Length: 297
Image (cartoon, rainbow, N blue to C red; front, side):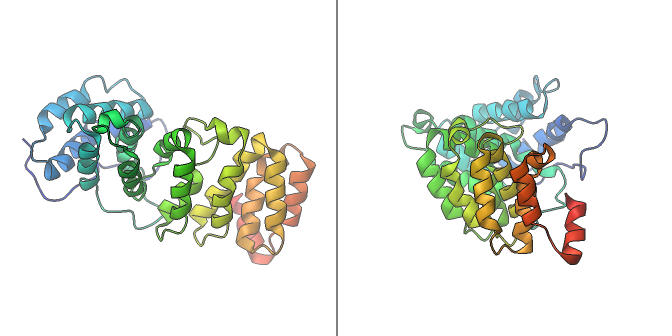
């Protein structure tokens, strides 16, 4: 058994994607060792050696997302059978929350298996002793997103339980942690890259608009950029909805909100869509801010 030092740890990781290297290396032997170590600290009956063997078997040929699912299955095999008991152990094993919204490097990808554990096992009452797992799954995603992002897992809950999940996300739009606020808009994007799409929001994006309204003037650029990308997703399926939203926001918009508008319609503008070009003209920045933001776009 591992020596139970009292500090949870993350594997070493580069600051950004390195040319010629795969993201899969972020979930390799060192990550498995950290996972085993962190759980063993809080769960005395955890057989970390057996977990390591299960986790490493068949891991090598897998890409990053498949590794996340593979390690989630290994966790399911070696943690308590009832989902709520297992996920509480994972919550207790987490490292401290992120203290900033940038320059965190790639180390937080360590929590991809935790995200997939929630999405794969956190919706089924049968795996939770017949009890509704919604609340404990929301608690887990709240904690995970403060260290990485629960944008992949929250989508499963939006598909299964749209109304109750949207209600929780609306509550979280007022959370003091910008990582939590960003999850509200990023996780509910209809076409989030790397993730499954949300067909209901591709068909009708209106249920997510209250979240965007709440966060469009967020004090964190990290959150506002997600709002812009969310509106950009809407523009791919319902350009008129996106354009009408941006038109309304443009009236009396701050320089920060003007940037959100320009960023949201940048793709249709590049295709020469007249309404998108008009909106970008309306939302022009001014002076020094304009020069700075031109570099960002």
